[in-house]
Amino acid sequence: MWQYLTDSYNWSGNEGIWARILEHLWYTFAALGLSVVIGLPIGLRIGHTRRGAFLAINTGNAARALPSLGLLMLAVLLTDQIGFLPVLIALVALGIPPILASTYAGISGVDPATIDAARGMGMTGREILTKVEIPIAMPLIISGVRSATLQIVSTATIAALVSLGGLGRYVIDGLKLRDFPQMFTGALLVALLALLLDALFALIGRLTVSPGLKIG
Image (tube, rainbow, N blue to C red; front, side, top):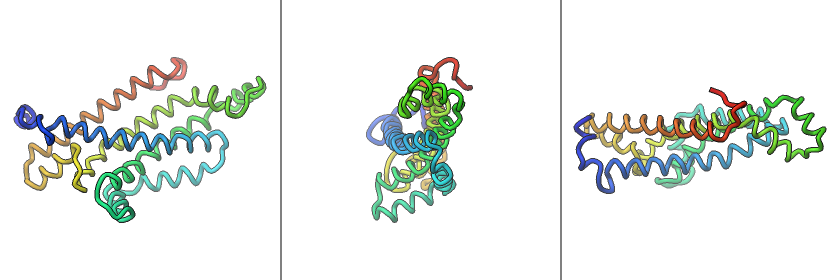
């Protein structure tokens, strides 16, 4: 594996390690962005109104319980195509639940006395959500995004199963060719990428969350 990593040939070209890392990041952030766009507003709404929580949370958890490979095959059947779209659907289905659940937990966990005080000051429902509930819930929201990121970046290797790129290419191709150094290299790079992204979101959390609200 060390020899594979230190060979400059494996780092260059359209199929080199740098290119595969960029592909993997593209799959990850495309799915994460869509997961945030879908899961965050739903979590904010059900947390603020306390309505629809049971249905939304359990539907999301049911999707997360499905095997990633099964989700990919289901997406292929539903879209009737092999490519980026089925992979995106499968990854988004895995990314939404932690974001939705953490956002709901953070918003619904705000002390009712704090909300009553804000209401007594004349704040509207929207102002209470944006100026009181979201800032207080921010540690849990960031935590949900971190969990979704780890889930997506580790599962994005399935893109290689539908003829796409990413770091999963090394795992799938290495298994097919019995090239174990290539397989282990792919697995190691995915693990390192996951750790780097987790550290990045941990830093974002420290920079965006009020010091009095930070969690470990």
